[in-house]
Length: 183
Image 1 (tube, helix red, strand yellow):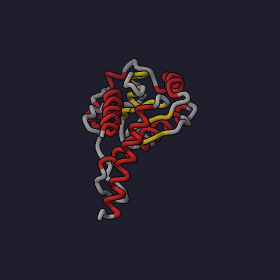
Image 2: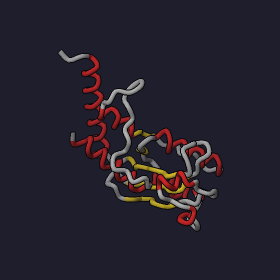
Image 3: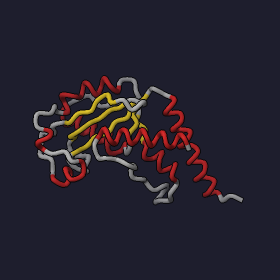
């Protein structure tokens, strides 16, 4: 007889598979990722943003001049340097394009808590309109899919094959959704 824990893990995995299949059947969403100057959602600034369609077609893929130096620790992770963002648009310069790209769309993201908060802080800092769309976290769905026990629920999984650039991470996330849908 199956234990209740085993049943729950199996059910959560099935729910994540159905979620992924439904996502791939829909066109009412975009996937977004950012690269930043650090991990603090309160103080970090966006240095790159990418938005892709459900088919994996880039809608936005741009470096952002954060207006502050990029710490070496951050550059070591994503490879983006001060020289690379020199002359790039500011977040304020691309905010309208971001807003148009997500208009009427659900936003999927790997680690929503981070990217949503980063963009909210950037909007507040620059006096820009907040993003009021519905957000869904692919990282949580993938944790359900893997079913590895963790503190409270399932352990969060690193994004497989992520390149730590915004577009690469978006495309890796779409590949992950496809992998879950095929399971």
